[in-house]
Figure: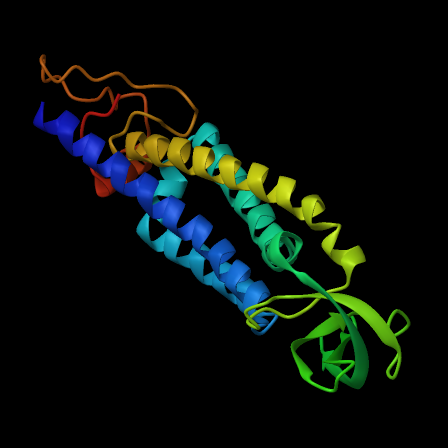
Length: 249
């Protein structure tokens, strides 16, 4: 019984750790989108989250001892969390403006270009400062990856956050909010489910039940016979023992 309780506790810790790591980057991306933080911050947060998840749950010993089923579940959770990250880089601000944005006629008063370098040569981001027709400034900029959509000096219609905390956007862009909302919701649900499943499977790897060839090794704690490790090589037995042996079912 104590072994079963330890296994359940280990599975719960693994599940919560994976959920925290694989959703944290999306939360950072949402905040970055809302408050116009550095564009690279969500990607940095995602890399850190993956490293932390590896250190806490999916270290080299567990990964080497895991079956293809466990590795597939872990990779699926990784991919789902990446799609959640991408959706959160665009959906939050558009969603807020779609719900509570106030239409305003504004003039484009300034144009700033920032170049981001990459191996392929990099790209430019064009950001435009706006002001109302009465001359009062509008908080935040509208940014584009091309300079042919908005022209400095022209008058455009935008949706503005009444609280003045979120950058404005054009109605056409806000109308595309649902394009990001649906993938964001689907990827979040998929991430949570896959992290839950993966955490439970990893706990079984830690107790020696899921092995590299994908078979299940059954253990009867009442008999006390332990795991049937005769079918494994000495290296595989060492890996399983180093992770920890218990009774997970």
